[in-house]
Figure 1 (cartoon, rainbow, N blue to C red):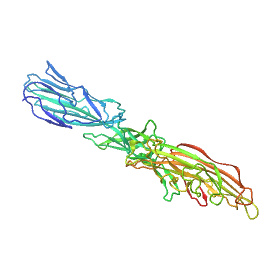
Figure 2 (tube, one colour; figure 1 turned 135 degrees about the vertical axis):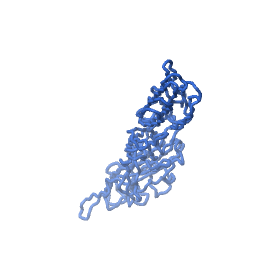
Figure 3 (cartoon, rainbow, N blue to C red; figure 1 turned 135 degrees about the horizontal axis):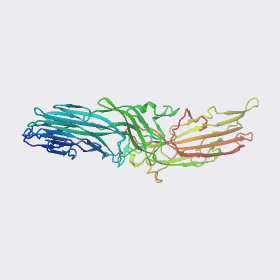
Figure 4 (cartoon, helix red, strand yellow; figure 1 turned 90 degrees about the horizontal axis):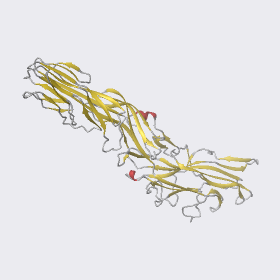
Length: 537
């Protein structure tokens, strides 16, 4: 029967059958199991040889992927003592191949490498052998050994190499036979950060809207004989503004943004929401963790994933008017009035001191299951004073007891103007197109003028927030600010005649004016709710 042996390798299991006819053979073989891995290896190096003292027959290990390893043997009919060897350094060179579903993926920051070295000897009487796996085990005599070792490769880049030098030496007597097989296989699985709640584009990039929940986790590919786990997480999301949720009291009396707790960044699956878009670039989500295989810690690894953060298309248009004294309601009223976008047919209606119009459009990539919605929130910083003469003739200045506070103005959300449907409105503008509907809110703060007072003064500022709630991505959504418009109204009027119904003249010219208007990434917050109680706010 020859000495050549037929075998199949199934993830470390070596099946061997007996020798056949006479002769000397050098053999390489293939692995019938194909592993789909992100780092694809190729092998080189290693020599199998037979030396009978006169001639040496040798052959390099032949690697036609996924072939690896080598065989050398001598038959029992040789008239000479022979030395059979498998030796030399085997090099596995790994080349980065992105997941076809994510062609834009860059090489990871860390990989876990599994190395498998096996050897098998068969010895006839009088034959001796020494061997080493190249991974730590060594010995002599007949052996069937399989050794596995794991390690971390940091910064592997587009390619990296892993080496091993398994070897065996078989010494036969004249008329004796023997041989052996050595194999080496390395598998590299990337450590990657993945994100839930994002929307993939055609290139596999992660995209998310402000206000949509994002959850991160770190993972490794499957190893043939090892279970990879992680611990000691330290997450770092890039970007200047993330938050946990926007908290509004049930009765709307208070509101605040709740930041992400520091302990969240030590969890396996941290969750957060973005407040600011990443512009033309992307924000990175990075993690450092301890990696273990089969419960044994290998060391610290890094992972990172980039995400493009989007803000919806939007336009904002404010209109402001003058300060007016009017008696259309049958009594004198000092109020901020001016441009009006609704119906002026009713004599009981005040023209608006401020009218804010806007359009918001969620990008088409994210319009599922709907387009999301938007609304206005208005905060007021009250500043009003009345002046009167008391019973003993003293002139009294009476400020409102909530002057200087920051308060929610009446309702949440701020009501729509008469020409617009009820809020919240759909964020369905076509990329901010002017052909899409403009929705409006308006306000006309003011106060009645009483004959019991001789002077009124107002100096108030308002913060108008455009708020956006994106489509539900299945990972939590919340309201986020888009735009902040600050405006104020100011008036100072004194009664110059005894009759209350006439004679009011401005001490200073009153006005309604824009203070600022800009993109905003700060949530509105307030500690009080202000409602109209005899005065318009």
